[in-house]
Length: 231
Image (cartoon, rainbow, N blue to C red):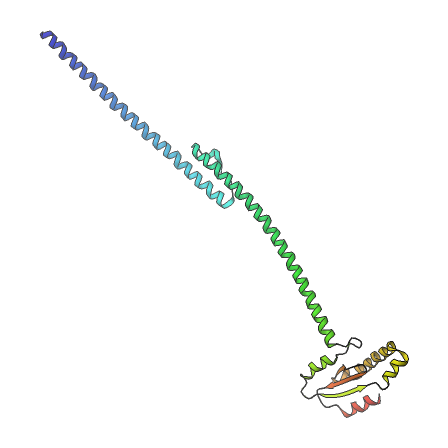
């Protein structure tokens, strides 16, 4: 019986040693596993941090220059997938930007053409206005200022002095020789008046068919009037 108890005690002691040894192995294994997990977590976090840094860098380039992301730069599959979606968006943005550039160029060209057209139209209107104004204030046949111009100019003269001229028997000239000859007589008479008065600071107007008016802003010299009437 004593031997049996002794064997049982030794067996228990051996079993305790085995259990303690297993506990030591298990503890060591747990430490190794924890170290491995920590290493893996550090490695994965480092890879994530690197890929996040690369993604941030490429996104900045893409934002500034519309440059596509290099998918092969990423080690994590999820980041490669994200880069694919980002590249698709960048391509779409590029296409839209190109379309907008084309539209902008077309718009600028249309604005340029419309501006030229408006400038040409404005110039044409200015010329037309000048022509209308000239026709309104100018006698068509003799090119002298007409009665409308006289009405405007008299307001600018302080002490207007005038001489009224007409051609005696002008109606008979028209009736006998015709209006063509009559027009020639009027033009030649106009040249005569202009040549004779241009050195005396006078304005000459045609009022009607054969009526002309000399206007001066001072008293006519007696010698000039006599000389003019004699000629």
